[in-house]
Image (cartoon, rainbow, N blue to C red; front, side, top):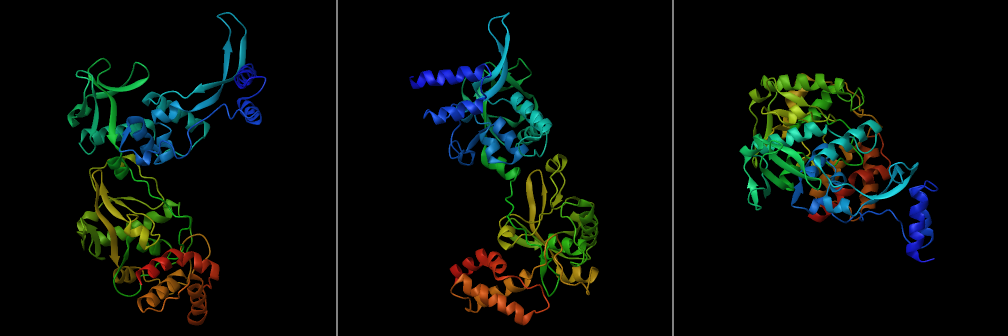
Length: 434
């Protein structure tokens, strides 16, 4: 039997329900025909490299903050996706009803389909968790377009030319599904408008930010010892954990809220000094900015009203390490226009005075075993500054393990493997610097 005949036979068997679509694929592969269902490989149609996104792609980013979901709503990608659909069908108008599997191309990406798909996935509990509804995402996008924070272009229906869409037009434009299942934005259902709307992806990704969380989150509490400043989040963690004496689920907002309430009150009344980065300079942050400010707590999803707020919002993010902190994973004062102040730090002496916890034993401040990373990492930094860093990672690990036993016998003794995991990235950075 010819390969095409073999494929047709498998299509027919699946169509009448004799086999499932998955079984048809397996049989086709066994016969050397390749899978009947198909989709582009993981490296094809990557949205990260696209300068412009369509409206469904932008909404997918706002809702999921996931590049795979954005790719899933790119037209050329969907046109190459063929998948099995379980359907009822009949021959003619009055023929018997059959149930089986049909191989179909995915539908073109439209706003209406995106809304329907999102609602279906929510009911079925499938796919990644959305950050907001399709309606909220569209409302958020339209506000940014109306206020001129995002610029879009489209094919003018009157002239047939691609033009930049004026910000004022978005006050009247509404999404309409045109002929051929193509999205259009019009002034009313029958008014003039634009089709094939494109939006620059870079500002979209900057405004609705996706922050990569590391595989391991350090569990130790940073104590307000010595002079200088500490990240605002670390001060709040110190307060919430009573200096490391109390562990709790980081997702438990009821544990975070009192700590941030008291810390913000101290900052706004000038009881604790605070500095931050604005532009490219580190400066004192005016205390009055914190009076009555709303807070997005660590591990909390950003609510839509906070994203679109005209007022400053304190967005607090967990302190992972210096690299993440310098890379934008820091506490910030932000509004719908973006960050006004970032890398917020409070004075250690103020935190220590108001929340001394002098008798606090060494505890983690978060679920998991206590660690001594806050001891051996600075020791490695000191050794690097004095040209004493070991020539190999294993050698540095052995030194720090013995140093911890000798200098801090009462502290948790990390295993060499754990020490190596913690210091690896920083060690190689220090090696490159020396």
